[in-house]
Length: 196
Length: 196
DNA sequence: ATCGCTTTTTATCATTTGTTAATGCGTTGT
DNA sequence: ACAACGCATTAACAAATGATAAAAAGCGAT
Image (cartoon, rainbow over the protein chains, first blue to last red):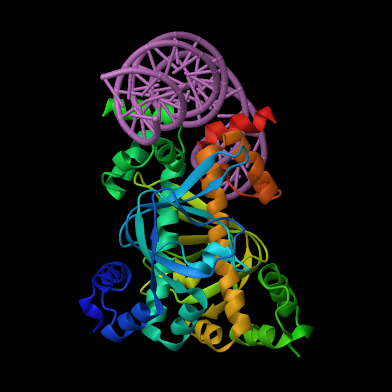
């Protein structure tokens, strides 16, 4: 009975963020497909150009995706907290090669699902398809929200929004990661923190 | 014979940007599903919260997506030129309601495909599925590229990149749209233009 | 506890970008 | 031709952010 194990309870928590009405059957399909993965703080989940064909659901911990800019500085693209699905396979990879880097910022527990099997499930099962599409939609929507904020908000406003989006995260991750996520230097971040 | 009509020749041009090796069969499936749409300069293709269940492929002209920020200023999210697919249905809508606005900046000719029929095709046909996934991937990749530039490049560098990405576009679209896309004011844009 | 290392803060100054307002300039309609 | 309008440019000043470097604070290993 899948709903007696701890793993599935928290997988459910993640699923509910995207498809709260997903049936028990579909949930159990996902659970059957998934295997748990543990990552230590600082460990790498996937690297740009490396082979990768999984979908990932973060059950516990904090992770981030990032890329180097032209000067080689790491720019944090997104943070991920408990219950969030990492960027979906189809948008995150090309020819099964990752386009991004992803590291665990704290110890993490995740569920991963083979991308091919998950695609199969999406094709066969309308509910899973809607779940997968919801993940895609949320991914894009978050990017659009960030895009507008980067284009028209001040650094202070972006920091305030960041604090709403990721409560307490500011205290758990290095400020250099937060600063690059916000598009400011860590000196500026420090200044804004002092102001309040 | 679909490849004798002008429409299909330019639909092919667009398809080649995403799936250059798509078979003639798959191309003809897409062509059969699509209907041509003409838009006059300034006309609206879809509006936030309005019903919309199409995929759109831009054959000719320039279009843009945008959203108002909190002050009501329109922020241009992306520009689209000949041969580009507009943001895909699954990421652009929620419950068949558009999340974005899209206007024609010049007279436009597009092909639109019913999203439901297109999804059906994606499910049934691996080639079309790969094409659709490629559209998704390009959409996300462009956002990630822009994200990095917004986070770590100066306004001048972003303008230079814009000129590479969209040759001549600067001369055809109102500068206020370019400026909001770059995340600067139109006064700043004017200054940068003067510098070179 | 202390040393050595990294991260964060603080200070100073330079640069970039925003704000406001005036000017110019082309387009359109009469 | 001219007025009226919208848009782009320019100028002057203010504010935000970056760059650099030094000081302070945190943190892990011994």
